[in-house]
Image (cartoon, rainbow, N blue to C red; front, top):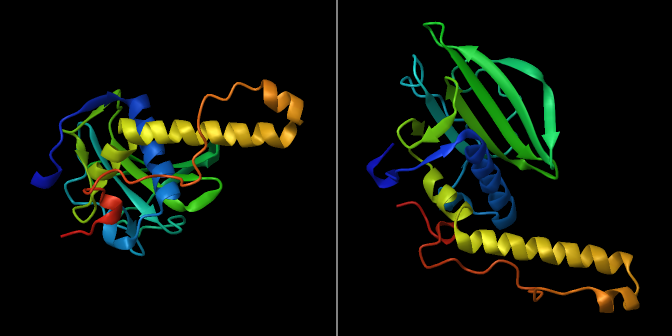
Length: 209
């Protein structure tokens, strides 16, 4: 990991997957431009030579476009495991391979059912009960940690909760008459402006130097 991306953290494997799903929803919602450095498109990254061997390792990135099928474009041959799995509109596919020494590697490709143009691709080695900054790596040209920081920030999570409440309210309105609506406890203020700016350093509005 580069000096610019130093960030010490450790989460359990379930929380790590939740973080990746948040990143996926954030990309699909905010639709950053190519200059943001928050995703890779067109060319699939090649796995670094250092990714292999024993121990625990994770290498991941966000990709815009149709990632699958990918063949051996990342430098490895992969064997698929079952078909696509879907839960809460998040789709996943798993693939397995081995390095030159026979160590097992797993690849997980994740996308949204209603917006398949965005993918989170994760490679891992070893059985992961936790994920921390010591075993985590990303392509150098991508600002993956900025993406993680924003998707886990209290400001963004608050906006997501408000958006979920608005969606719930709109669904209720569509199915209710006025008398029922008058009895419905409204606990939020509808904001038609959508997502606001996070800050001047918001990477969705900045370019890679």
